[in-house]
Length: 261
Image 1 (tube, rainbow, N blue to C red):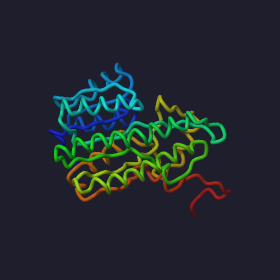
Image 2: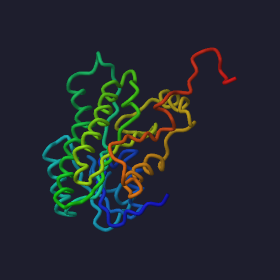
Image 3: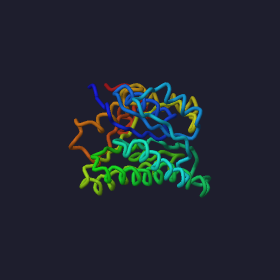
Image 4: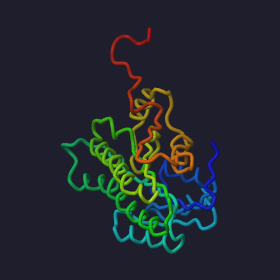
């Protein structure tokens, strides 16, 4: 399906990450202007140059855990665009650690980046949309971990469960303004530099995915564009899994029987 987002302004957090890159590229190809955010200004500028984006695209380098930076982003959007049309809350962390070992500061960091930032940024952007009478779209990048607990990453699972509930809460409260809020739960895509995975973990996880492969550049990105398109005009408050079946179960066989028949 071809999507047309010419004239639309799209904000993407965590734009230098794997999914951030793929989503930004997809929106740029569809003609959108981009506001890309992440912490590293050099990497961010290079990312926008690589992705492209329509005239009026810009970057905003900041740590969005800083409330002043969040307010600054809102001010920049209001000044440059008036209001965005689309917000993609993509920034997130996936640290590993057992509950008995994680300290309060790490807990707060995980919940802050994965839940608090989407809560506050959605609040900021929604107010801009409402003031401009813009029937916008917001997509949160969640995870199948919202439904399936994983040993050693329990805080991450909890944060994504909370993000899915936040998605539904905002969908309910913003519906009267014509603003739709949904979530996409992408599949497994190794290669993150902020939350690196061991080779053994990558191989083990990949082997169990029902559709037989890891996520690629067009999988979750296409789902995000669909949910922001007119084709999804009657969809709000949903969480769409795009993970090759990974969240429903694993192909791993733990008994002696190794074949289906």
